[in-house]
Image 1: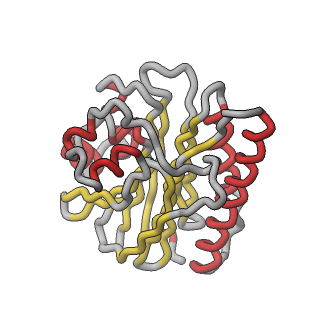
Image 2: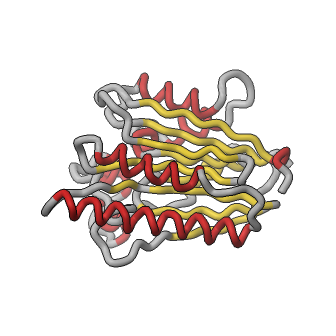
Image 3: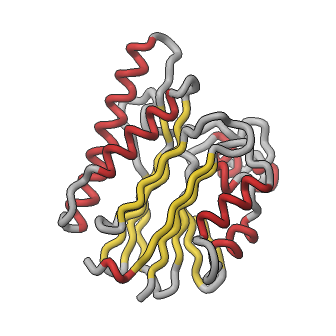
Length: 242
């Protein structure tokens, strides 16, 4: 793997309303691995969940093949899921210690994206921003069923209800996967919903494409905070250079 083929940046902020940050990120260009996790559960439980995911992924050893890395990421997220479910059960009925996850792995000219929840991945190519992931959320299910429009989903009162997460009470965690080929100049964005639910898509595209000045995640997060983001805000950007 040639590390010179890409560069990456990462930034997180608690937002304008929260006293603490339940988001975590992974920025491992040496592995070709990046991730964003958005914790949930209250009383710092979300911080615990996203932090456990970060620690599990950051401790993956280098020099794995592409297939070994993909398998290791799945294994560690699944193991973290089982641990979080057990921890919640020990806290009593109704307790939850959970987190979304969106992760990108890059080898050669290809990337694989794994996710559960509503943290997102986007691909910016030739100035056009396209969402790679599909939210595991109540409002996305309503959009897919035709009950509401995408415009109505943006301000839906239950927009924060997710239907899948690491640590959510379920027998088996299912991670969706997308694989695509990269082109020189492509930029990938991983973000928590505090970013994509605060900034319009066209603004995100413009700021992600900035070539000079501050790193794109810093500019994106600062713009979300300036727009009064009430949730934690995290962004990780990866540029495929050649």
